[in-house]
Image (cartoon, rainbow, N blue to C red; front, side, top):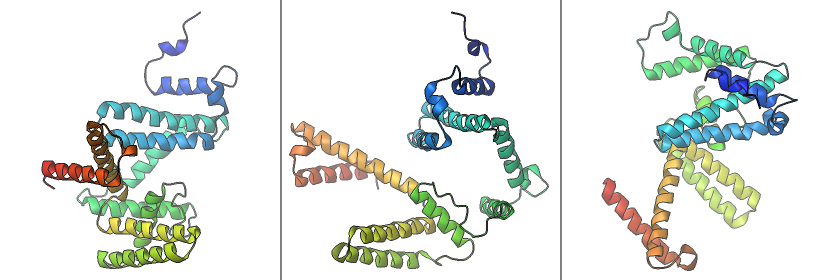
Length: 274
């Protein structure tokens, strides 16, 4: 069997784009790749983005390299599907993001001064983005905050966008008071109302918690990932402690597990000094 010419292409973007075209070829490509659509691939795109974040969180450059490749492939996949439909090409995607970055950095690629703080650059960035939204015909302040974002991230973006036009609490004191109010309403819903109302009140409480994180300059997603990692470590310590006694969580009492949790917590605090 003759050697496939794909092996002779120089490694790089052209080889990757050729691979994608070959995978989508209706006559000789991969049946799975051929039948995919933007909608069916979107969940994989989101998953790959999270895996990039996970590699960063775990401090693994080698895994990050691989995950960035997987994420790049998702962009190539979407662009190839668009080209198949005559919508746009990968080169159009590259040209669009290049133009956007040049336009949004006049202090680097234009005649504006670079003598400004990172905070001022953020303000300027948002000003340019607002002008772009207006040019696209977006009318409302919240019009183009993507609906498909993870709920916590979307809450944060909605709040930031509203804050830019003055719809915001002046300090954390008002946010904390609102949290107490929403927590009380959640308790009332639990005691007197149905599941739909409980979900509604839980959403209100989570939304305000995201707002508190924003006011305290904390990334709520990063904070929750940190809490998840902490829970995972401490629960693993519970399992290890029970295993040393010949037991598992399933055949242990809550008191036993809670005691081991407190031991793990104390050990962590002693090791980190916090």
